Image 1: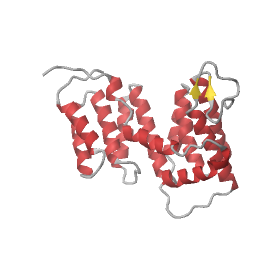
Image 2: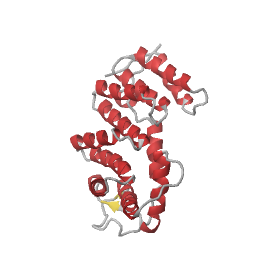
Image 3: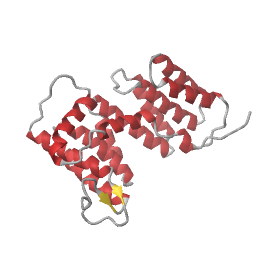
Image 4: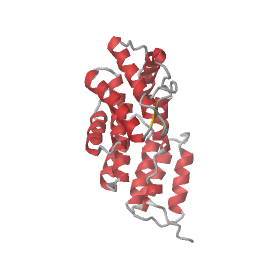
Length: 251
């Protein structure tokens, strides 16, 4: 059999479910301040896993408006001919550089965390703050932000996402031991609010990158056995076939 090699980047590719969960948050972005409060309410209810009716006070609505704006900025277009006013061409913001848009988004998320610390929206803002800081190369600050969100006990879903983001960062930085520890903790945590199959896929990536092929295969098999009806089983099978097929792993 051939020895097709997998690069570290391929092995540590971002978990598709983690990306999908981010998209769930982003799906409730607004394109105008008038509707952002309602969108933020739905966002918090869905991502936080809350049931029943949750009343948002005035400060929470304000925080929701800022969160919607921050996410818009996070996804702003980049164009060399963008003006100083990011909304000059319409409701979709536009910046000259990625650094400019991420810095603008960072300010919004940081303000929510600083000024609305008791708002349910602030946990999501903290998660996005960490992602934005990573984009800006502010690694120390990003780790601190994500660790704070990861330790939150009120919104376990976003806390789990923050831990996944931390693990991905450490893995991409070559710190597979740190990444492995976080992911193994998520796999063992009975309160984790994201699919264990998704965590297993990411953990297998990390183990494979560290040259621990047999351990990676076991993790994937165990994850597949967790739920026979999981929509992630197809992805788990793909990962298993890739590892069991015998391609060499580059580190």
